[in-house]
Image 1: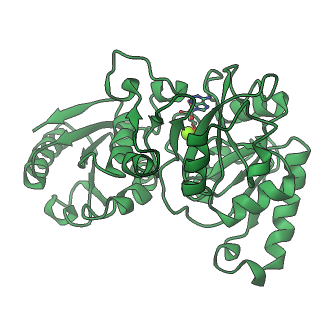
Image 2 (image 1 turned 60 degrees about the horizontal axis):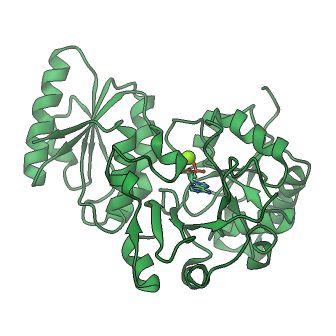
Length: 358
Ligand code: AMP
Ligand code: MG
């Protein structure tokens, strides 16, 4: 794979769509490539997506190939208006309707019963289909102009942290895809929440930008997929079984009752690893970064008092540790409440489940 990857800067659209007609010209060019079954990366409000025509199995095949993604891991279809749903799904249950009204466009993916014969490859042969409407002006304009449901996993090489800037996409996929729309840094920074609505109660298959509390606020009730919390149970979302979002260095999550506890333990472990000749990265927060000895690579990942900022910076900080070639990353951990559930889920995957309890 070595193709010429086009690069269009469209970040001004995000601030003022009407003042930037050239941006729409770029988006139309990108949409034409999608119609020709080429792959284009684009910004969404969660992370950058790697888009392709969801209805063409050979295009979806190219997505799996460009990412090096295991082919039993189904993709999310992105739409720009609700009319696009009808040809794709067997039914739209009332529960789905109320969640769509509350959270679309937005970081909520719904798993529907699939219309037979549709999007065989994108659904990895399952009889369900994951669909969402992203809340990003570039993503919506691109999908609308292409007039297609766009299959779009995160635009990273499989196993690498998801991309939250176009530069991250370039690092992983330049030469492997037809184009990249650069809309600036994404907002939320962790992927969408995946919710199965094929039963009576919504089940969260992957925690994300919309919290369990928000889903329960609309649906009255919510369950977590047992596979998310119990390692002995296979997760219902095929993607959740993979180590994902992983930096190159070995990573450990340090759990403690207080920040004091975590900081003391991290400092002790870091100093010991350094004495053994390792370069150590410490994932701290704005509040705690100064507590750590300066000879380690200390990066602040948002503010502990605002976990949305931690989500926003998470993948970028993981990539920065890679750039600095650290051998070992020791990370502070966060309460599993609200968006903290998604943050801890991604940290757990990045660390391959390695935890140290103070
Ligand atoms: P990504 O495209 O990397 O954001 O990952 C999409 C996530 O949605 C993965 O965890 C998939 O396993 C999950 N997913 C996609 N389609 C389905 C489906 N039909 N049923 C359950 N999970 C799904
Ligand atoms: Mg991904």
